[in-house]
Image (cartoon, rainbow over all chains, first blue to last red; front, side):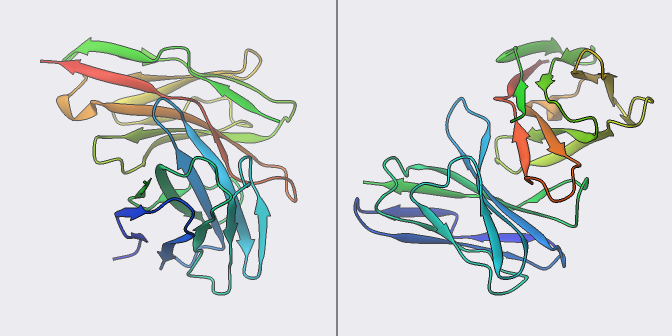
Length: 112
Length: 117
């Protein structure tokens, strides 16, 4: 089945540690995105990539980093510089401008 | 920058009735796309309907339809014959069609739809 796989579903980390969230897609989509969702908020864009080896900051990129070494993969690292990392993180992909985004099932990150 | 506003944090409707969710947006662009996404308790984001700004005709998908008013920058979602499975958070989203510009969807804060049996 084609789709977007995020892992793990739940992630717990101690404060001060970096953590990497995985996102893999087999839809052959060029563009990939990372969003953050907090209670009572919509989704906010962290980073996006329209092509391999290139990515752009979204609205809330501070404290996060990404890489896009392969078309299928777009991992997100939540660094210790992110002041409030506990949130629900969603990865998405799309095939081009104007097309809808398809989402993974999300990763719930809790930092204690 | 574009903004999307959903003014109804929560809506409630009786099963089999019709409900309309509101969405307004602000943009200086003339070409763009609008979407409604549904997020059930599983938190999986599911596309409900899509509208191209250059099309005057309102999009429809089975029981779901939109009222797109470009001049008013309004994009409401109408759900007919509401079903228990429609209960979810609904998000309105904007995507620019400007090539080479910033990409990604801009979301509203969502409307929690409750279906009463």
